[in-house]
Amino acid sequence: MMGALLLAVLPQVQLEPAVVKLERRDGRELWTVRARQSSAFALLERVAELSDRRLEATSALERAPLIDVSLERRPLEQVLEFALGSAGLRCRVERDALLVRSDVGTQDTAEQVAGFAAEAWARASTRFPRHPVAATARLAQGELFELSGRTDSARASYLDLVAAAPASPAAGEAFLRAGRLAAARADWSEASEHFRALANLPGAGEYQAVARIELARATLALGDAAGALHILEALEREHPCWDASEAAARTLVRIEALLAEQRAPEALVELDLAGERFAALGLAALPELRARALAAAGASDEAARTLLDLARTQHGPERIGTYREAARLAQESGDAVGVLYVAREARAAGFGAVVAEAEQRARRELGLERPVESVPDAMQRLIQAERWLDRREHEAAADAFGALYAELENLQLTPLVRARVVLGRVRCVRQQRGLDEAVELARSERERMPSAEGRQRLDLGMAALFAELGQHERAADAYTGEY
Image (spheres, rainbow, N blue to C red):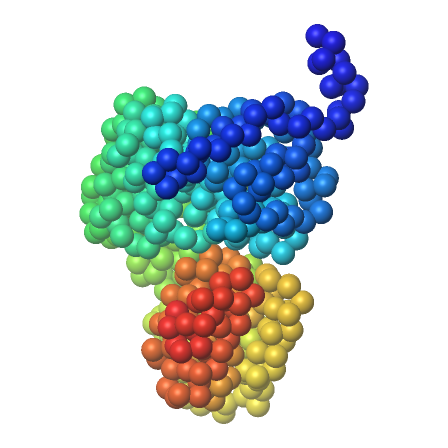
C-alpha cells in the first residue's frame, strides 16, 4: 500500500527493471523481462548490453513515461513492441543496434502511420489466432488497409476473418466491407456472394436490411432488375423501415430497377413521392434519375432541362457528363436552341469542349455562325490547377485536374503537357482514393502515352511521388518505367 502511494506521489521515480534475462536456444534469442514503473531507457540499456548491440535513440526516449511489463521467454521484437508501445515508442531491432524513436514521427505520413497500425494488428492476430479479439484485429487491419488505399490487402483481411471466425461479432462487418470493395471495382458477382452470405448470417440481425439493399443493387448490376425488385419487395414485407436514410436507399435502388425494367411511369411516381418524403435529405441522385425517367418516357426536352438545372448545383468534373448528356437529350428532342443554352453554360463553366460538337451541329441547323468566345485555354487551367496542388488546396486541385483529365482526348496537348495533366490527376487520386488507384491510373496512361518524352516525364513524376512517400525502392523502379 505504502509503495503504491509513493509511486503516485513520485511518478518520475525510475526503477531499474527487476529481471532482464536472455536465453539462446537453437540460434534464437528468448527474453524474459519483468519491470514495474521502470525506466524505458534503463530497460533498453540492459537489453543492449546483453545482446551486444548499441542503443541509438531520439529525444523521445528521455520524455517517455515509466513502463510496466512482464513477459516470459519471448522474441526480442515482441518484448520491445509490448514494453515500448505503451510508452509511445517504437524500436527497430537490427543485427548490431536498437534504433528507438517516437511511435509517430514528425516525418511520418498518414499512410505510413496507418501502415504501422495495420502491421501491428496483423502481428497480433497471427500470434494469437484463437484470442477472442483476433477477429476484431483482422477487421481493424482491413479497415486500415482500406483507409490507405490498399484495397486488395483489405479484401484479403476481411476474407481471412470470415473464413477463420464466421461466428464472431466482427464477421458481419467484414462481409459488408468485402462486398462493398467488390462493388467498387464492379465485380458484382463477388459482391452479391458476400451480401447474400451476410443476409443469411446467423446473429447478424443489424445487417439484415443493409445486406439485402446491397444485394438488390448487385443483382440489378448483374442485369436482373426483376430479381432486384423481388428482393426489395420481400425486404419491405419482412423488415419494414422507419429510418429515413435507409428508406431512401431502398427507394433509389427500386427506381433504378424500375428504369431498367422500362417502367418509366412507375419510376416517375416513385420519384415524386421520394422528392416529398426525403426532401430534408437532399438526395443528390434524384435529379439524374428524374432525367433518365423523363427521357425513357419520351420527354427528352424536359430531361435536358432537368440535367441543366443539376449541372448548376454540381462542382468539378462531375458536371462534364451532365452537360454532355443534357446536350445529347436536347439534340435528340430536336431542340437546337436548348443545345445552345447547354453549350453557353458549359463554356462559362470551363467545359465547352465536351459539348462543342453538339453546339456546332445546332448552330448549323439554326444558320448561325460560331461564337467569338472560345473555351478557356487548357494551359492556363493547368497552371492554375498546379498552383492549387502546390498550395495543398486539394479540393480545388481535384476539381480542376478532374475536368482537364476528362477532356484529355479533346484537348490538343503536347506529350509533355499531357504528362503534367496525368501527374496532377494521379496526385489528386492518391489524396482521395489511395496510392494503389493512383499508380494504376499512371500505369494505364503510360501505356497510352504517344511519345517517349511524355513517358519519361511521367516516369520522373512518379519517381518523385514515391520518393516523397518514403518508398525509395519504388522510386528507383519508376525511373525505368516500372510502377
